[in-house]
Length: 182
Image 1 (cartoon, one colour):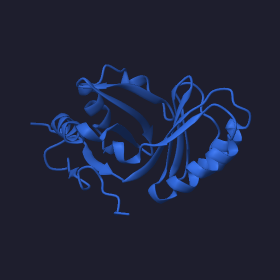
Image 2 (cartoon, helix red, strand yellow):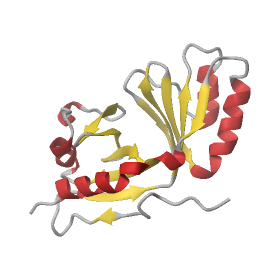
Image 3 (cartoon, rainbow, N blue to C red):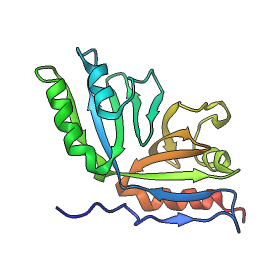
Image 4 (tube, rainbow, N blue to C red):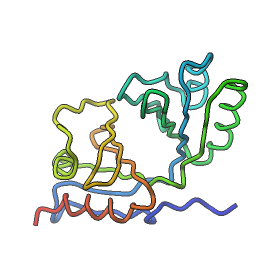
């Protein structure tokens, strides 16, 4: 098996000289899309997988380097270390055996970016039709950034943004462009 590689090789933009925010690609991260609703033991399966409870609508629960985000009424995004995906999928299959669900490794299909600095909100404000001032810590928002689907949330003084890997370069470039002051 080959080693995991981030979509852009860890690309970064240091906004200290000509910008309002720093942009960096993080990862590779493990990500599992879990489609399930109302299953017996679902909450326990998620707790065992990533150490969090099931999130409420439009929320993300974070526990260390793991998280569970609400994506839709029957979909969750599990975020975890890349090397734990296979074991986590096996654990979910065992915990939810015999019940209608779908758990898929989407780690290599996603790119993840971190936006940090005093102007992080302004970067999002320029790109997304979202009232960023009303986004509290722990809320996960699915929207578009310059017509590309993204999801993002506040975490640790910055914003984590997830996009499809196929548009990683475009998303990085628009984030950097929005972070530039000139």
